[in-house]
Structures are given as structure tokens and as C-alpha cells.
Image (tube, rainbow, N blue to C red):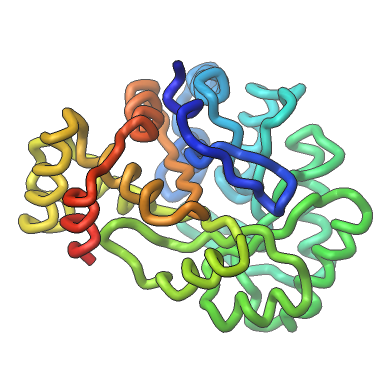
Length: 296
């Protein structure tokens, strides 16, 4: 049985069931989220296909990964999309170079970005379209109103938000139905705990970015340096009990922490993909969870 198939599903937006361990495409682009990671695109195509073959039903991408590169790879690898596969993408940020980002939330910008994603992904409807950042210079109602218009036109099935606080989520829900939130969250970084609690109350999916602490939590089972000696020792101890790596334990903790958490770790490596997906098989004990919960 594939690792992902043992995981329960989450009803994204109430009507799109996805397995709770997905695949993020940021690992398919180069340093600074610029250009392609691999000179040979077939490596990334094969990785995406392997993820889906092993049970992944949620692919998380963005128009500015590359830019354009990640979305084009997703379409090249997976189109025509199999039934049940949800492609989530993001818009609202314009790239100006490696690590260069410019928030662009005007209605004309958002519409143009969404329609460009539809073309690159070769689809008429995006399962989930997430506003990558709220533009502080544009009223929230105008930004979400544009996404609502696109939803009414059938170009977006569900709307999500990235990097918001609880107050912003509450305001946003008064304007539009919000199906997902994508905030930074992991076993060490729980600044978005109040957002997670609101998502649990309202049945909103929470896609944690940097689920492995941007790699800091993904060392081997004997790595005592992940996030500091105390943290590393705790992760390593739990990992040793399960014959796992610290990265797998960090992902397993997210899956145990809340039923609305849908981690989508990314990688450019087949070995790391298989390792990440195998985290779905790990059943943490009450003692494991108590030790890990105390790390924040």
C-alpha cells in the first residue's frame, strides 16, 4: 500500500476530498525561487508523476515559482489531470528577480494572473486559487471581490489565503467563502496557532508552509542539530523509536496535531519524496506527542 493512501482525507472547501499529505512544487525551482532546479525537466516531471502514483491528490504550486516554471512542469507532467487530483495555485505576487517579490493585488492584476495560470495549467477551472499575499494598498474587498467574480465565472472552485492573521481571516470570511489558509507552521514555529484554531472551528484547510522548517527539521535520525540541541535531541529520540528520520517525525507531528493540517512538503529528490510520503504511516504515541508539543 502506498504511504499516502493510509491517510484520511480532508474535504477541501467541503466538496473536494484530498489526502492530507500533498506535494509542494517550490522544490522544483532554483535558488531564490528563480528558474528551474534541474537542467533536465524530465527529472521534475518524473517526480510529480511519482507523487501522484504514490497516492498524492493535492499539488500545491504558484505562478511565481520560477516564475511560471512550476505551473508549466505540473501541466507537462500531469495533464490531463486524473480524476480526484486537486491542483492548488497562487497569485498576487510579481517576481522581479531571485528572491525579488512585489505584491500586486489590484483587480486587473489578479484577474490577469489567474487567467495566465489557467493557460499554463491547461485547465478551465482551478480547484483552489490562493491569494499569495494581501496587498496593503488595495482594499481587501476589492481583492476578494475579484476572486469571487472569477469563482462565479467558473474559473476558480475555491478561494484560499496565504500569510494572514486571525483578524484578517475573520474579515475575509465576511466577504468571501475561504476554503484554505497557507501560513508558516511547524513543530518549532507555532506563531499561527490562533489561525489554526480558527481554521479548526470553521472547517478550513490549513496548508503549513515550511513544514520542515525550510530543511532545518529534515536531518537524519541521529541529527541533534535540528533547531538546536534540545530540539534536535527530542526529535532524534522520537525518530529512533520509530526507525524514522527527524523530518518524518516533524511531518507526522503535523498530521497528528490537527485534522485540518494538510502539509505539502516539496523536494527535488525522489528519495526525499518517498521519505516524506512514508511519514503518513507513522503513528505517534501519547508520549511522543507530549514531548514534541513541549518544543514550541
